[in-house]
Length: 414
Image 1 (cartoon, rainbow, N blue to C red):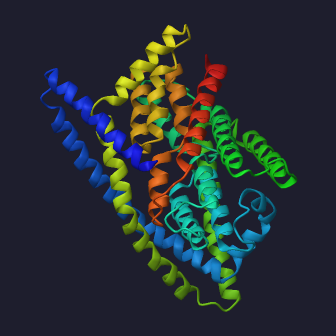
Image 2: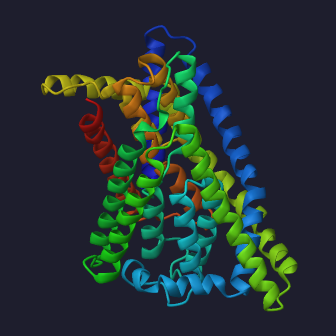
Image 3: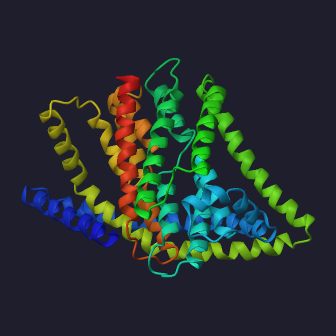
C-alpha cells in the first residue's frame, strides 16, 4: 500500500507540474526540485535529531527492563492487553513499552513518545513470525499510536495565544478549544481501535476494555474540572509541570529500583543508549522517501486543487462551506505535522485566530496525527515492507477524527 501511495504522490504531482508548465509557469520544476532537496535535508535532520533523545530513553528503558519494572507494567495492564493484543505473550517487555508510549502521547510529550514507540516496535518485531510483514500487534499498536489521545494540545494553545497578541485581541482565551479537541481526539482513538478490532476479530465488549473507557472518561472529567477554568498561561504551566514531573519521576523510579536491586544502572543505560544511533540511522531512507513524495504533491499545487474541488462539491450539495478553509490542515496532518502546523497558522492569520475557520483549524491540528510519518518511521525502524491493512485503519481513524472535529466545531462555535 505504501508503494502505491508513494508512486501516486509523485506521478500525480508530476502531471500537475506538466500542466502548469503548459500554462506558462516556467518556474514550476524549480519549485519542485527545491522542495525535493529541502524535504531530503529535513528527513535527514529529523532522523539525526532523534539520536540524542532516543539514546536517552532507550537507556532508561534498559534500566527499567533489567530492574523488572517494565515487566511489572506489563502485568498491571495484562487484562486489557490480553484483549487488545492477544498475540503478545504474557509478561513480554513490549507490553510495558507500549504502555509508556501511550502515556507519553496522552500527555503530549512527543519527544518522549517517539523513542518509546520505536522500542516497542523493535520488541514486537522479536515475536513477529514474518520479519518483513506487519504482525497483528504491530498494526494495532501503530493505529492506536496514530489515533492516540492527547489530553492538552499545549503547542496549539501557545500558537493561538501568540497570534492573538499580534492581532490585538484583548482577554483572548487561547484554551477555549480544549474540550472540543478532547472530544475529537477521543473519537479518532475509538475509530482506530474499532477498525483494527473488527479486522482482527477482537471482542471489545468485555470488562477490561469497558473499564478502561469508563476510567478514561472519569479522568477526562476530572482533568477538565481542574484545568477548565484556568487562564491559558496557567493551564499550559500546569500541564507542563504534570508531564515533566511524571517523566522525571519515572526516571528516578527506574534508577532507584535498579540501585536497590544491586543492578549496574550506568552500564545498563549505556547498553540501551547504544541502540539509539543505529535505530535513527535506519529510519533515514524511509523518512526521506515519504517526505520527498509529499513535497512533490504539495509543491505542484495538488493540495489546492483538491480543496477547490471539495469546496465546489460541498456548495453543490447545498451545505455550509465555512469549514473548507480549515480542511487543508486535516488533509495535510496525515502527511506532515510541520506542514499542517504551517497551514493552521496561515488559516488563523488569514481569517483571524478567533474566527470559526481559525478555531476549527486548531481543533483539527490538536486531534489528528501524521499517519504517513508514523507509518514510515515505525515500520521503517524494523524493516517492515508489507504493511497489510495498517494504513487503511489509520486513515479510517484520521477520517473519523477529521469529520468529528468539523461537526464538534459546528456544535461549539457555529
